[in-house]
Image (cartoon, rainbow, N blue to C red; front, top):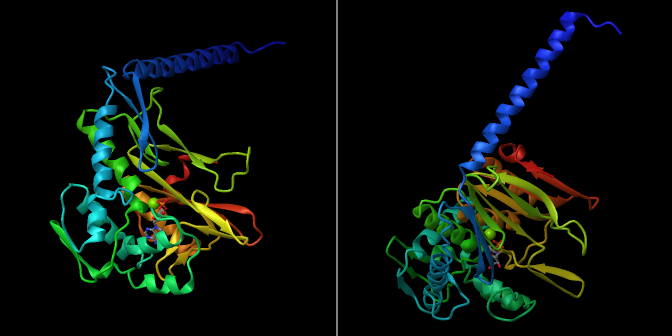
Length: 346
Ligand code: AMP
Ligand code: MG
């Protein structure tokens, strides 16, 4: 076959150009990895679940002791499972002058989201969470009378607070920050690492996560989103998402529930009815700048259900969402907001 010399020349030039460009890409990739510090990986337990922290550090310094002591202080303030914690003592009494730096920020954030969700997110729902068997006390399916009598204590407006203290305007009101405490814990650990000069990090507590910078392969951190409908031995992950400078929190009706007389009861309580919600929304993964916000909105979406959750997210431009729900035919569907679409792979 005769090939025109000009065509051959062009082909050779093109080949050299491709080799040259690949060479540059490879060299830059190699250099960017070379400049990265080694990875430190820490795991532990907190808030009745596990945590995992990964970060890049030039001297390989392990911050586990610092993180553990920070999380101990955190729990001593906000855990309703610790009898003499700051929150438990407030729940048993009427007034609290904040003792830790943790109480006011989580209370303020709760109030903000309570307002933005028309009361769907409500940290005074704790007595009902307990009554339905999802808190520190053991119980199951309360009677309608018990639910009604506890509903009078679901009332955020009966708390008065400022930046120094909080008091109850009505006896018996209790606080439960479980819906956003893990996310807040993630932020507190991330801040701690940042204060140590670490910026390439992944912090995860019980599935709520914050990522910043790059991983050990000089790539964005990639996080799995659980399949809310996973069957035994089936696909555990629903999707994966790349994050940088962003938090992700997921709430689902699959991770804390029980079945009684053929009915499924999950740990998300509708503050208006006092009962666990029953929705087609199976899980809500929310993306925000900080993990406390993502965590609170993820729970709020589960309370509100699919349509109201979509409207809430669409109204709040600083949030993104990946919602998994079942349609009228029982098929699994997903809804992804524009801002996160390019970072998610199903
Ligand atoms: P999450 O796994 O982040 O969705 O948090 C679930 C926890 O939030 C539950 O176990 C309850 O302690 C708490 N919770 C349930 N319903 C509500 C609600 N409507 N508002 C605020 N917290 C709630
Ligand atoms: Mg939450």
